[in-house]
Length: 193
Length: 264
Image (cartoon, rainbow over all chains, first blue to last red; front, side, top):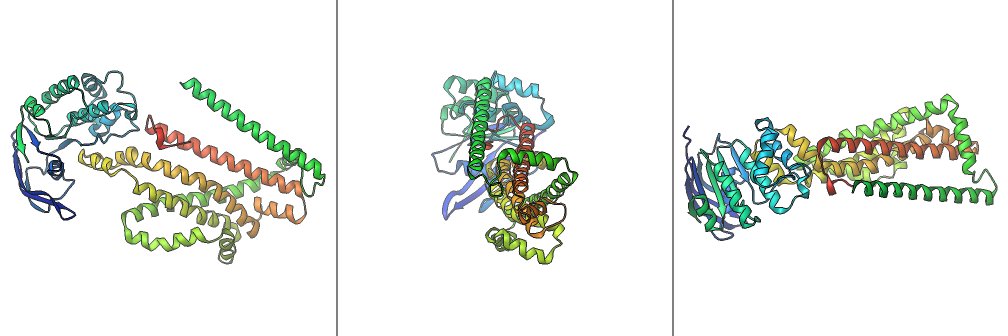
């Protein structure tokens, strides 16, 4: 099934009278990988928060989001520290994904032996991979990842990127990154801000 | 790791018991030095008196009556405190509306409330009402602070992933609020018990601990006075322990690791 693209038209957003986004426009096609790139403070996270619906723009139009399921890796991990990795993912996926599937993906991401530990006890890189697994296993039309590979060493990062790429089929993926190599490796269309 | 924690807990309990025994010895010595039972009875006499009182059904009747009435007030305060905190968290208007009442409740001495409400309420329900009044602001304030401190980012995450409200309640709200709630209950339980008994001592409802305490004082039955006081302390400790067992069961039911979220 082909879904309508996401279209942002002349989006502007001010915080405390300071323009964070000024007439930003972009199109994210279905079944595509996109990377929003740009220097810090240019409004990348604000742009994706507007797509997610967490921030309302001051002006501009957003099309192609309503009715679609969105999966997100936030800039922070946003995990429930009092649950283990498997339960954190089950918390958002419900019965749609089995615990065996969750454990299998977490193992693939290099979390063998840590899947049943409370996430508060995991390292920063491990928590990041739990957040990525959560986004990949949630049955979404749009996957948004805000600097998902931050804090991962090079070997782990490329392994994780391979796994992420394999889960993006038939989805609209939007990444935020500073790293051009990551964008190239993902084969993403670059949107420079 | 688990063994060392168990040993440390065991040592802590032993130490607590040793210190408690030490204070009982000090009490015994003081009573021997004073040697006037009407001023200070010895712990041995108190224990003997408790055993004698325990043989009488009216003793248990008084405990049951006082406990049910005071605890009912505590439960009511919990329900209203939580509901009011939820409403105040949602509506600034409601919070401002409630603010003067809560401030008055916090500032008014318990004795003033007891004497005032004696005019309005049947003495049989006085301890329930006073316990309610004393605990309500504690639960309300703590729950409101807890609600304000819930991580908005976690709620946003749950909303983006369309997590049902029941799951959000169980896995985000309860773990986030439980530390505030258990702290409030820890203070509130002791407070409700003390204020409830004080209300009984002034209101003198039949078959109550307060009534028995008052009679002991009037007839200068110091052993009874001490015995009832010890009974009150024991009940207070039992209720608090039971309550924390319940809280522990609840948190075990929800999660693996509460780490710094709950200190007990």
